[in-house]
Image: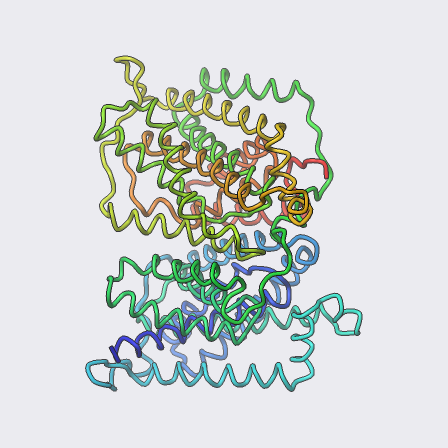
Length: 600
């Protein structure tokens, strides 16, 4: 058990370094910084390049990496985050996600996507305690973390600038009124956080022995969980959360195997948030409405579109494209339609209930697997399996998410991300090999297997989805759900059971996500767990935000842009993602409520 404990502390050491940067930015700017994740991979690749390709010593490469990461962090804050963070927390968060995609793909273009063996700049297994072997590198990592944490603590407690950071984190408006240069403090927070991200990336590469431009996503997500576990905004909580998560993860893997890693991580997170909202050392959120959406709804000038434009769009999409479109256009169109179905269903959760759920990949996966298994192992046909898969996704996702609806603030978004991740991890354990030979739909004895057939099926389902969602939005139920998103305190005082209506909105979204997953499964005829990633969840969120967060037909516009238009760059995947990131940044900067905006 001692060796497991030591392994957990070493792993938790890296999580703690990453979590401190994430928590620092959140505390000062109230923004979840996804760009921080990219600095893990970028820091590792820069260190590899300086040491291996340029022949620098490790101790020269280390400060160079920190300076580069710090400079990039400052640039990101000044050009992308700060213009949006004060007024639009969700837009700022999405911008950091877009920046993360750009950084990862620029890094891939510079270094290629292959894994590189990280140079052994220090011994990694020259020491041992019992059967547990470790090295000088591990002691250096622990010592560096201790020095950084002590220095940060002293800086924040005794330094004038450090006290300004603490004051800004506690109350940004009050700090500004007291003469504290808040913009300078925010810049400094980004500089420190980005440098710590690069440092953590170097250490994780040193620990595992390899580096990759995209390796930052997984370790960054875990560091984010550690920061949330300790309490977003609390630096001490970030350190505690990192070590607690590392130790619990190590013991969980020891008893249940590495395949249960994600389940262990997010089950711990959800349990802590349910039992102690706000994390181990963080404050319980006092704001009842979801900050990620509460200041976002109704922003921007409404763009009114005449009815005949929508009629022409339906004719073009349902008649002209199927008649004249080739296989490539129709195949791309099916992807647009399926994501539009999923995103249109998600508008009731994000746009009306005011809950920015980040785990939509979970119910999509449930729908895909449910439909595949039903049509392969029961007499049910495609036409029966599709709606039934939606119902199964809604039921299972609702049961698993039921504990999280009492969580407040940003934490509810993180908790739903955990639910989605746990769902996919469970599927990976239960069905690790994927499913082949999923039957295509049939009409009587006629197989529907061409791109045109799939396109028409998806188009009909999308029209039904938009009509149903529009009817819900205009109904009494929709108005009650919207009251929850607009002002939860007022809704509670009026006798509305806000927790139940959030759960109901999530169930509706999960139903349409399950339907979309079912359509994907039957058109691919093959599925496996690697298809249902966090990036899929974030893609759904960005489609909704780009089109219009509360409008079902806005999701169609968002899907056309992010899925259809980006297909023009499919032959250059890295450039495609870079353009996608730039488009997202421009939209949230200049159309902050989306291309289509509802009236306030």
